Image 1: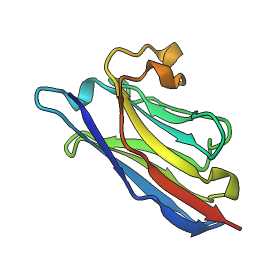
Image 2: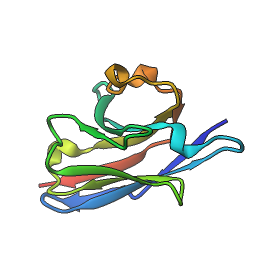
Image 3: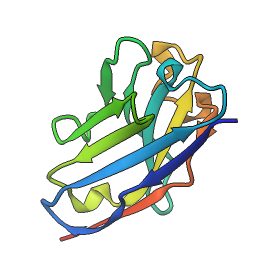
Image 4: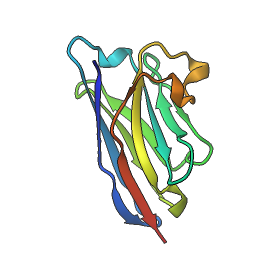
Amino acid sequence: QVHLVETGGGSVQTGDSLRLSCEFSGSGYNFRRYVLGWFRQAAGKEREFVAAIFRNSGHEYYSDSVRGRFTISKDVAKNTAYLQMNNLRPEDTAVYYCAADQSLILSSIRQYAQYDYWGQGTPVTVSS
């Protein structure tokens, strides 16, 4: 079983930055083989795709709303994925979730239902 633990959320002001971390663990599971995604869910709204990094190529993919402000990355030595969030806006307020899946194809990386493993979420609040 893969376990994902997110940390780094908090309350900030408009324009501030935060870095979220997602620690991956699981005996016998190889971090390198997983697509890693970040999703968010604001109160009363559906969970939405934020960013993903592909398993082998390391190519990064972003939603239009965060492209240019957020950066996804991973450190294979630490089995950890990151989401650097700059120039935060009130509309970025949400619970942020890390997700992982070993068999995702590129066309499915934005679909939250396609990911097998999820963290518990970390809240981010951006005030104006």
